[in-house]
Length: 474
Image (cartoon, rainbow, N blue to C red; front, side, top):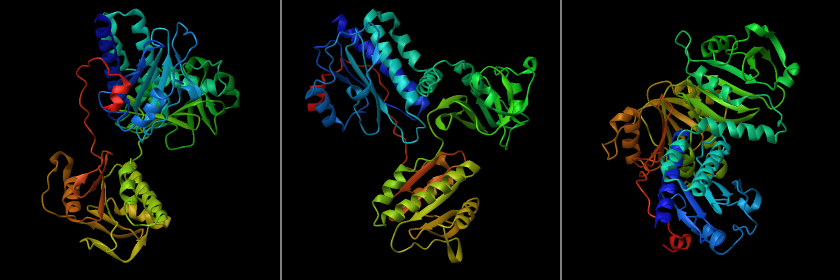
């Protein structure tokens, strides 16, 4: 009984802490665990928010009809992540990581893979931490430390990023590195939150391996005793003004700002692009995360138009036209978001084009032409909606949307959002894309917001996780 109680409490705290931490790093996220404590134990599953619902056939084939996931070799004292085909369980829309240890023979952790993720690497490091805590706590069986284990997983963004950066640079051949990642990450967050004369930082800062500095094209270098420390956020913020809106970058060794340079950077360098209220973190040409609001995030800051794409697939448009229309809408939405003003796009997918009140043209604008697409983006600044047809042309701007009140209106969302709900409720072949000035994007059809976030129920406590075989049959 005591063993079962410890198992329940341990898994509850670690899974809930993991879920909470990932929800702050990404969108609202779920977590699930499949485990077997000993080599002969039947697999159990803990999935309180139905993350793995719909994947029963694959889980059944992998865990119940096969023993490939079991290892007959003697377990090492320390936990190790299962790599290669043995640890592969590809589930659509899910990130997974499997591990083994002496105290926990097998465990596989799962979480949501959101469409707008820059990289899944940091999230996998997070799952690895959860697996490590399970192994550690099952080895010690100390109930007093279980709530701390969950708390630790709520605040792992910097550690997950640091470990992923180190692993990725090692994979690229930089095992013997002198770059300290933590000070750089702290500086990125510190500088991003420091205003200068009321303006947020803009510009680029890179960290180059000290052994590669002779390959950097410096425009100027600072004397050794006058090189600003990265921990002096205010000083670094001031220096960024010298590289703002230019091809120049601040060059650092991970501790100090060495000077200003131009051109390509050598080696597996790190780069932080400050873009006002938000920014981007790179390893060479690979985007690994973004940062805003004093935190790192997995989102790539691009509009998520998955629901819009799904609506296009349900129309009778040619696949080529669907793809082109998706690209046009995506470009317009992202350009509007970058300019930080809202807009509304009325996408008319019907065979008979809707007549909308607004400003029209003698000849509709062909949105496949770059110049006319840019002009359409400029029209988005005006009050009213842009009317885009299935013929890939802009038929009007400053258009008005009206309609009768519908359930689901939200006064906190403003006129654009609620007008779109009313308008689409009365026009079946219309999809409306609403871009708010503070960046959120809503896809609305038939009076319903398709992009509404799902509020998962909070995990309040767990009984002993059921056997996987019982869960599949249920």
